[in-house]
Amino acid sequence: GPDAAAYDAASHLVLVIDHSGGDVTLIEAGTHKVVDTIAVGGELEEAVVDGHGRAFVNVESKNEIAVLDLANRTVATRYSLPGCDGPTGLGYDAKDGLLIAACDGTTVLVSAATGKVVDTLATGAGADGVAYDRARRLAFIPAGRDGMLSVIAIAGGHGRIVQRLETHKSARTIGIDERSGRLYLPSADYLPAVGGARPQVKPGSFRLLVVAP
Image 1 (cartoon, rainbow, N blue to C red):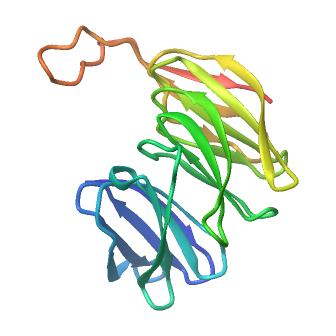
Image 2 (image 1 turned 120 degrees about the horizontal axis):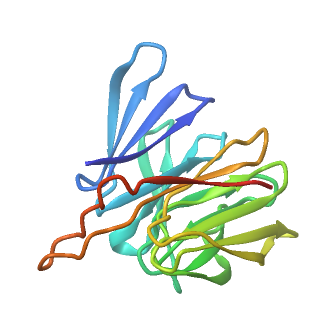
Image 3 (image 1 turned 90 degrees about the vertical axis):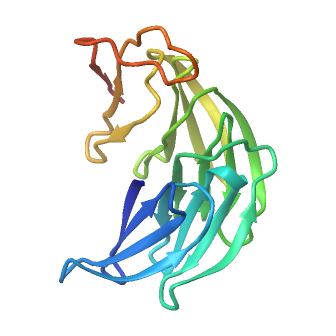
């Protein structure tokens, strides 16, 4: 059940995040070979790296961030996330050393050094991603159930919401072109749900929303 991947330029490792398996698979970029696996446990979502030998992984089922030591290939510690239900998307602000974790209804800003939650911001239901614009120091949180994109400005070790933009219900993941600052949010219409199953996408309804800076 891989759900995300991240690249650590310092170690030349690709981290593949196994959602249902609870593992992080390490692949050597030069040889394309699996070199190790870190057993984290729980249902894993997104990962970011700090460029100094650590990786951070959202554990959705435990409301925590697992901190990985890439040199020793172990879980170094875990950060509990009070005020965060089901962390999914994750971003990293290197200047202030802040992790940006998207939760269901909120986004928490966490000190990467200590694990302390420094801000809890209301950002809507159904988030499944974070995009971070390093040049403009803006974080973008898409809330798919609410059809809303929250824009968070980061400065002085804290964040504040500076805009809420209507998008489309189901737009819960996001990508960014870091050169232009453009954002891309896939979305679609859904058919009525049957029983307890997930609703199916209505054929031909896929759209890509493009948000300009």
